[in-house]
Image (cartoon, rainbow, N blue to C red; front, side):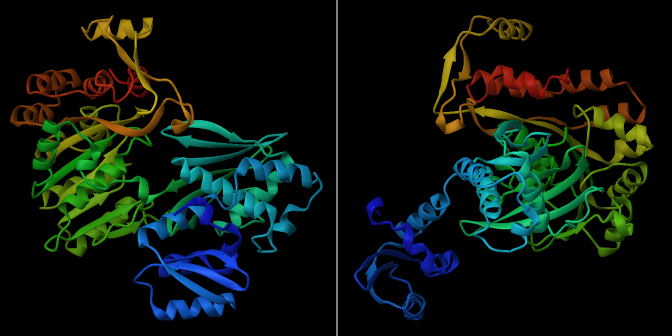
Length: 496
């Protein structure tokens, strides 16, 4: 639909949810007549409601449904302006002595702070941020977005707006706005373009007020299936074969924010079906999975991973997911479940796949039990993908040359870099992709685990069996232009 036909002023006549549900769009006013576009499928009842809501004479035009929905999305996504423009206006119109809390508790969308925060949240979601940081200092409230794993400065409202914004966040998260001395956790649910977006909220008291971090859980940016993980083809085939095991334990390892939960959810989606009972215990569940019973850890009432897992075993499960193995008790229960006919999937924090064996042994798991139950271990990281709009080949720098030499590659070969453009917010990167290694113990490796062989012994045998290390997968992506060598080095710098 042409831009000159779109009229922002008419949007106030109807709620967005009504227009989207009935696929209608107000176009213009011709004297006392309102012109409305609607889809061929729009009901007569909806058209009557439009007449009642607008209190005007209405002329209807039939347009394609896709065209109307696209125009609605465009109108509402740009309707509020930019957070930076709103912030500039507020700095000019408000004084350092304003009573922010009173303005917030008016519960009206006309409150400037409410509109500013809405714009910040909308902007962060549209920029694909995974986290929003509100960091108070003496002079300003520093606001940063974590995009593709890296923090970027976005806004710096003056300090007199600090308490207003933080209080509004606490109201949305249903936290105690009078409590400033203790950390609090909450959750915010928002609608953006008709899609639900969840946010986990964490507050902690710091010297200059309260620091707030929002974790954005946007389903639109998550592909919950194994194909969407983008493993190497041979590794994906082997991985899919392994998860069909009737019993045993599969582990996913990596640092916080490396996509472990997404991998576990992909496994559960692959295994879900009418003949399986899948249950999870998580802290907390990040996304709702259809047909799967998900339980949240609640430390305040004593529902820990270990206690919850004991109760799940009484629910006749076929497949169990434990969000994280953190202690000996949880590890032992998970191994016992794997020994008694259940397929268990969980996560650990280790640098690589083989280290997971030694982490569990250090927790107190008997090596002979681990060797009997371990199906496999996936280690992973997330690397930023080069922006397709500004990616270019160039000569490697000295650091990259040394790295290529260590890999026995030509140090003078062309490598890929992102130049930075408006499409990637001048970072050179857009989106992320996993890099993986998959450790699958064969009979010889199981024997070595049971005999408490060294890390190096396990690693040496794994290499002879075709084991592809994490770094090798990352370098392959870099040399094919999907990411950069510097990015692979950044995410694997503690891995050897």
